[in-house]
Image 1 (cartoon, rainbow, N blue to C red):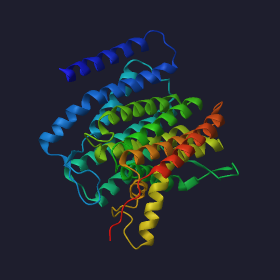
Image 2 (cartoon, one colour):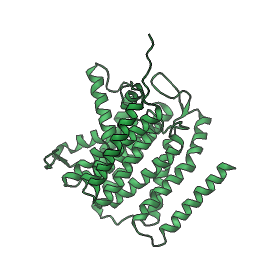
Image 3 (tube, helix red, strand yellow):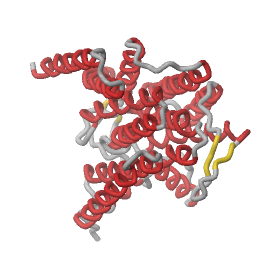
Image 4 (tube, one colour):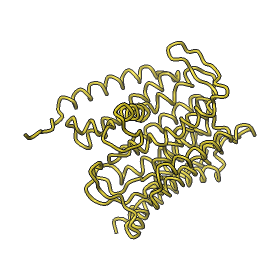
Length: 377
């Protein structure tokens, strides 16, 4: 009975949101309603996906590298995917989207195509355990098609100088590396309950703020939907998790974040805007980069799973599961605050300074209170 009550409450909340959205409310609130629709869809669909996964045996089993100790359904990405597309479909049906000129439509369609394709690749792996090479090849093909549709890195900025230059023919390889790399970066940090969903949700929320300020409303709608889906999924994925997002969810969120950064920020010629996506996604980007170089320097394959990720190192240093996740949330929020400051948003510098102080003091307190692992002789 309690679950039925929650379901009717969610539906009622969604209908109320739709009512408000058509009651001549300020246009900015449409982004909030889009996010809430995604959240409600994920809250409703995740238990259904979990039940189907349990019946079909699509579970992630424990091993020596993973931290969970019981089989977990790994199809949660289906709910995230549904929440994002249903909310965007609702926004489109309600005519909330801004008018796009012909040249502006293809990059947005490229983001949506690539997001669907990357979800399909990950979902296929969740079902059939595809080889790493086959997944990588399909990812590069999907990213290449997205590039042809207009998801292209055309400019880069030189740090500290502010000089922006056109990358020319390097646009294709740089874009492919960015899109495929970030999709896998989010997948690689999906090692603790709620980590990938929380980091992606924070990054999507920051992208929402920055793209709205830089007048990229269509990208902001996608960011709002993705943020709502991530928040809704955390209801079931935060420690102790009831379900995992799987490769379908992590590839979908990773690609969508990376592609939104390209279309909404990097395609401009403003030095600050070009830099923003790399700052917003700094935590998974730096984690992936350091792990790859660490593996190569030790003679291992860069794609061989191990325990060199940031969350593994924090656990080994004595942090608890939840504290590790919350600490990485804090780092992601701090990076996001820097991006907001770089974007030129009014009071952005003040917000970044306050966030830096809070995260710094909090991180120091967590470090002092961690439990040192006991090594027995």
